[in-house]
Length: 396
Image (tube, rainbow, N blue to C red; front, side, top):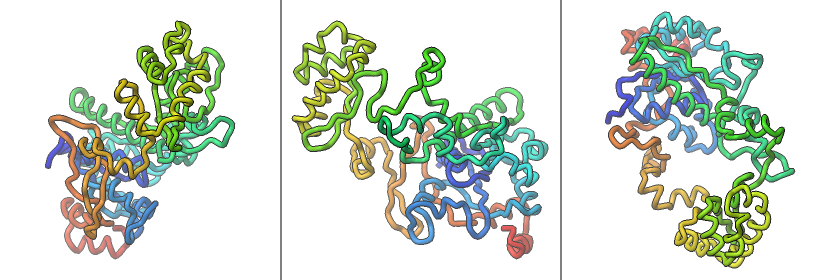
């Protein structure tokens, strides 16, 4: 199988989530991704969350379509191999603390000298410059500094995390966008590569919508609001008779009128003061109480059916069992049937985005540690004895 990135070679030196997630997306669309891992232990993600045998199940999703090469990057001979690999690479991904690559002799100056067309994606907590650049920064710290942690949870209670490593994956997505822009610039304009500098906190901050403009204009500091959507009404989670919750977004002007008619509150739907969003926001408590009174008398299934009939956006809160059983997920190829290395059946998340002419594909399962070390080093011209010497020195 091929893809739109077939012929693009990527060296992935990062670990855990942000850098490797960016590598996964590039690999899904045909890029040849050579993942460099420490000998013996490999990427720590191999041991994160649920294990199957000796390897994390997460590894199967994160590292599909990649090749695994083991190199101890602290050793000069391993650093020399990376420089040789970089000569023919299009993209190099790293997500170490700023300065680490330079300490290994693998900073931008060294890499661009051997390959002026190389694009280097650097993902870090705070970016490659600024007063905080040397601080260690994981995804949760980026989420906090970027502003999303302050808004997550119930009012007056301890801020909570989203439930997944959102800061890391948002950074990976920004990184992928950046390297594709840099590839376009290189191939259409200068022929030169460049550094794509992605900070975890900036990637979160970039999706914070009107948070900063509102503060700069009014001094208002937005607070956590639970399941509601402050400033947009009605939009909330409403408890049903069976104890389940319906998410209902009746915030479009015409949608609001249909919603009020459905729940028997035409008095609200026809009230001129509530005809537009700003008026509804001022009366959001009254509107939410009216919707809650209606949902409290209906089971969730009835609520969702009635909302669908009236073309009112609504849905239930999915857990993973709902996702795995959902026909729409399956129809959109978002539940890919795969196996673990021992043949155990497994579902993997589908490939995004959907391209009509050159879609991505799963071409190979996640590699075992160092599975491709010998073949990649052989492609550089190293012989069997050279490779054995490197192995005896614990370099690979």
